[in-house]
Length: 78
Image (cartoon, rainbow, N blue to C red):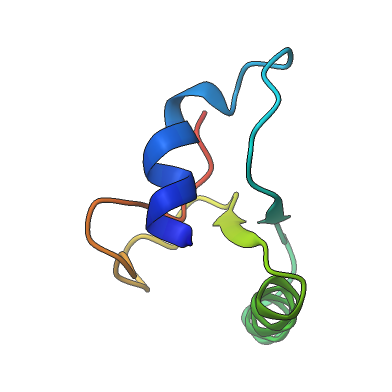
């Protein structure tokens, strides 16, 4: 689901008039590392349970995590 939704719609998500076919959870956090990891795990679980795609809107996480699926990304477009 992730590679299908993000691969097809990623470059159009920043457009406010665009209506995506898939549903998304956007995670963004600015607190300490423990709170970030806890909230990221919660957002991931919510995305799985609600059949949504998780997108991360936070700089600096590229060095901590790798891309989960080939041909897609979990970073929010600018």
